[in-house]
Amino acid sequence: MVEERLRQATSEDGAKLTVDWRGEQRHLRVISMPVDMLYFNPDTHRIRAQRTLDPERNRILEEDPWGEVAQTYLADLLRQKPSNPNQTDPDYTALVDELDSFGQKEPGIISPDGIIVDGNTRCAALKDLGVKDIRVGVLPSDTSRRDINSVELALQLRRDKRRDYSYINRLIAIEEELASGRREEDVARDFNIKPGTLRQDRWVYQMINEAIERSRTSSGLGLRLVDFEDHQEKLRELQRDFTKKAATDPEAAEQLKESRLAMVVLNYPKTSLRLAEGDFHSRYLEERLPAQLRPAVQESSSVAIPGLPGVAVPDATAAAKAVRALTDQLLQAEATRLARDKLEPQAVAEADSLIRLARKSFDVGVKLAGQNAQLEKRKIAVQERLTDAADYVKQCAAEFAEAKAKRALDEDAFDDALLELRDSLARLARQAGRTFSSPGDGVEWLLAATRED
Image 1: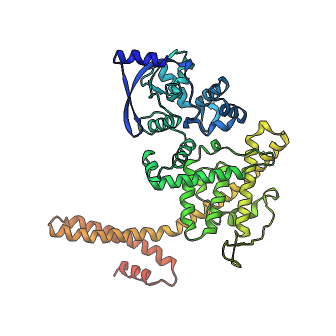
Image 2: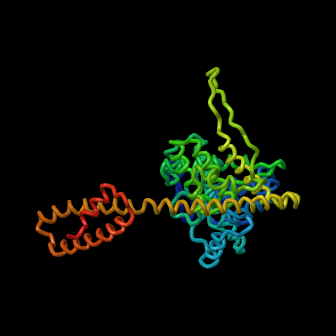
Image 3: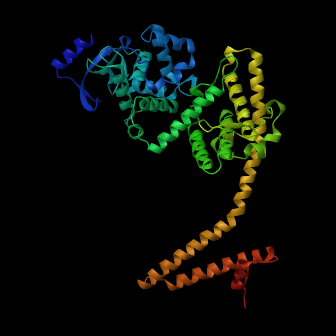
């Protein structure tokens, strides 16, 4: 049918669609195809992370991607919200409404075998609306699955695409592009991000995968990539602060990372995560943890350096191990809670209880850390104001000379401003005079400068 309709479109000199094809521009003929005859692309990055949500259906998808069960699973995933598969994606609902009101505006793209390269979600929406046909451009006859993925990615990364990849699926796409041998700089350019941002996202992706492994319970269940979908900004900020701290204090950086990862599991907002510095666990949390969340005391030990006989360095301290052990507990408890339909009710209830206890302890720690942060901010606020004022006066001196040289100085306005400055300094001097019994040189100058004859 594809070949027949392509011949017809060519004879009629029908519409064309331009795509990036193996490093050059290729013009594709557009034809109309029945939606029920086309195949959803099992490799599409739009739902790559979500595929593993149902292990049994995902196994069938891998074994028979073009079968009815697998194709139905793909259609279901295309409709779901990336961060919550139990809900319909609002973007999908909006797409259905748009297609219902205005019809299909842009053609999709298929392979000659009927695999949807671009337009998987549109095809699912048209099926839901009962529309029989979809307009599509057709790739060349020698199209491979690698070509399909390359074209899909190139189209997705155009800035005019309506529905972006979710955060996790974007990370997966980046890793797959790099795994194919491409340079970081080239992949970053394709994804419209800086190389530094790409490396930051790769660090986050690795940490997520490590957290998933650490969340594995005795039953083999663990967290999933989609469970981190809504935490993009928290995780990026975690990486920035970890890297900065690691340059001067690697152990404090590890404790910062573990505390913030635990708070991600407990779903704290980004503003609360910022309060968890390297000493958060020991200063605000440790003594408030209930017995269920107190790991066994772990002594630090030494680790031999390969290739250097007799040379060893200490591994993580007991404090760092304690923070990590707590995070492991919470990761596993959250994995249990999310798998409640696969486990005994008692196990789920225990996990729920553990999360509630942790949240209660962390709430107190966050409150105390927040109060301390406000206190520290107030401590430095006064001197920062004076430093800012000094900078303004320096700038004023430079601009005064320039205004004088250009004869643009308003002497009366300048005199009025100086009187206002004098009155402000006098008020500050009165406060300082009551505060310091043994004033330093700066306070002495202020008192002398504002003392009335």
